[in-house]
Image (cartoon, rainbow, N blue to C red; front, side, top):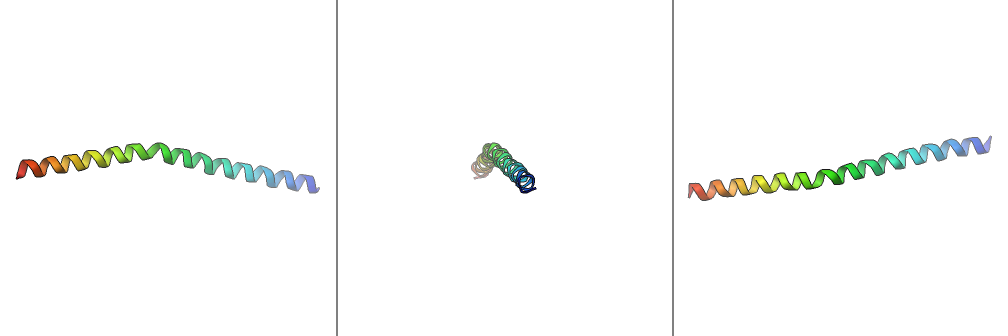
Length: 53
């Protein structure tokens, strides 16, 4: 009985940690695209200011 309970606890623990790890990887993949978008909008605003002045 104790082995069965420890098996269930281990399974739940491994499932949760793998899901957290997968979310972290997914989050890291999105960072470069966010940085690229911010860079484009900054250069776009900068070019507008240069044209207007």
